[in-house]
Image 1 (cartoon, helix red, strand yellow):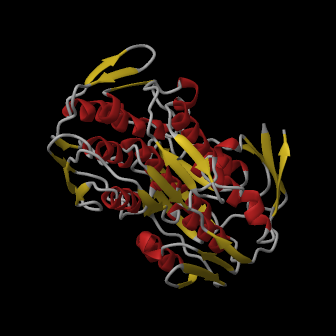
Image 2 (spheres, rainbow, N blue to C red):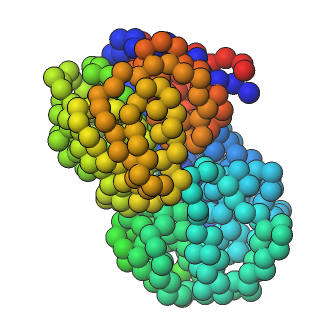
Image 3 (cartoon, rainbow, N blue to C red):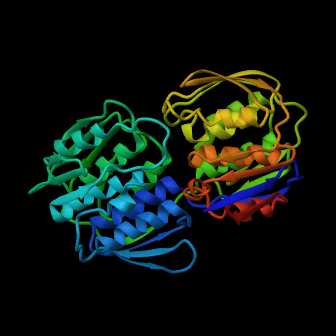
Length: 419
């Protein structure tokens, strides 16, 4: 096991580049199962969740070559297995995205209950109801699920609540299904548009990606192609939160500012001094930060994955702020760690906390609970006085590639050590 040792309150400045989006790359790599032709996917982040999905894909028979950094060639010509390794799948929420393609190509799939971050209940029944709507038979056991079908058929499916992963899973199931599929109340994230654009370039017939209503006309097969993963807006937002909270002249590059419009609006109210370009954002010195309220919402609202870095930012703003997490009921528990560092945060209920700022944070020995709370604790440690130690950094590695090396280039005192 490894940990981060961080000496806080060091001057930060310079440029940091955003990598490819984890939440797009996972889905595009899983889509390789839909065709027996060769695919090339570039700008893939080198993170633990990607490595685990690559292992799963190889085990079912996908040939994968990793060329230059972040470029993968995939070929699913001979699928040899339809059962997902439970040791891997149980740790990776994105493993369920392989199910639809396996049903389409092989007529069956078996898998355990997938994992990911412990941040609240995940609605498994949405996925099972969706697969059944396409004609799959679902058998549940103590080990997990076994799904089978003779032929996936287009369907009308209404999502009872907005779910990004469930939307993507149904898209991947519908592409090779016979007939027309209508999906209603779909998620609208840019990562979904990235996936749909890639599939359409490969011969799929998908309309409405990025809107709540999608139509997919099933096709007999897909061809090969190339795809570039979009920049990670969660990385971009995290880096910007660090720059604003520390009042540091940091330039964040290789990003798409149009994916974070709500963040810019809120940071303007906070008093952040930003220059927003076509593919970059530059943080400039600001005089005083003002506390504001925040409510997470599905895209294009404020993303739940940026709630924790924004909460750290609010500990440095003057006044009271209310953070309302509407997506996951377990996502605010990390604020107890911020209180240990000196923050003044009151948990009103599992979905809301009240922050009194500004407060001077102090270094502590902490444990990363999940990907996003983990990066928030790193940000807090970087702006705190004294030394912090953060354990369980595998959770951070799942979403952020070599983050300590990238922050070191900004002047941060952060090192990875064996625990």
